Length: 396
Image (cartoon, rainbow, N blue to C red; front, side, top):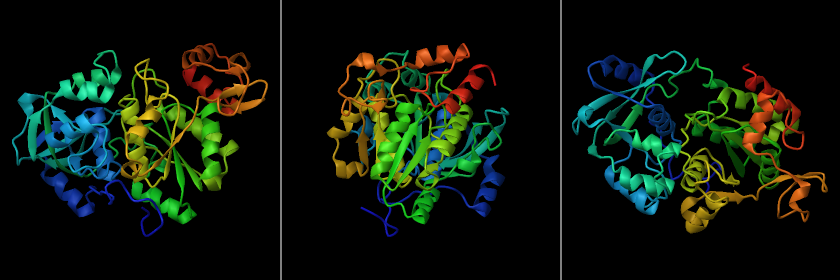
């Protein structure tokens, strides 16, 4: 259902805002030194920012036990809204505060190592971290080699729940991956869409540079929607992923030369990757709904890692959910590749030619080419994007 501005409603019906205004933020900073301190992991810091700006609406804080169990078992909050992944504040049992206590939440700025007050929380609940329930439900595996599984295994055994108030959403504003010029909260993207007159907006999630196949998906979406939001994830990712600063340079050069500016927007999403495949695809869709998008591009092995998920599991999961409860339309695309006979980007739905006519390059093969200073072929990557990647691979 659209809002009065004509935009899609946020998940749960209202956009959450847990950012403290100036006077309140100053008062919180003044008393923070007297509060028990909780040091957040990089993932928890990202989650706190996402809660604070409303990207995780309807959440107003870290989840309690009832919500966590319901999410694991049925992919809904205890109140009934679709939600696929627990958003938890797990700490060491020995450092757990008491129910009713107010705690100060600190994060570490990656570029400086400085400890930054990010927000406060009133503890409403303290409960055991049920990793045995969470891990197989969310990740469909218990393999500790899976980066998301390992992340949860390494977390504390006690969870704190309660509403948060955020005083500094971006804890590293001068860092190389802050992107303040592209860091927009959901209220801001919604205002942008309304200003441009976009009623239908497709979101493209990425943690990688946009290659020709991705570009094809984006432009297919632009044919059916008023606008396209290219919305790269710039929060915590696993070692080996291409740094956000390099990816952003690729996005900018690609948009400048190959996309219509009036129909394209670029902002960043400060979320952490879970690599949870199907469930994370649903989370990414709900987040984009909060940002004001009506459609969400779901490609091959969305949010996957290794061989843990089937090629189209992240698309199929939407068939298990009530479309009205999700509230955003998934755009399901086949694996796209360059066909030498068609002389263009195609998929199994559009091209009749055999596989030996297609150019597919794996990420491993592309990284090998970049490390050797060789450009991937133009059928795989625009030359301007390839130049950026070669510069990164060569160390700058």
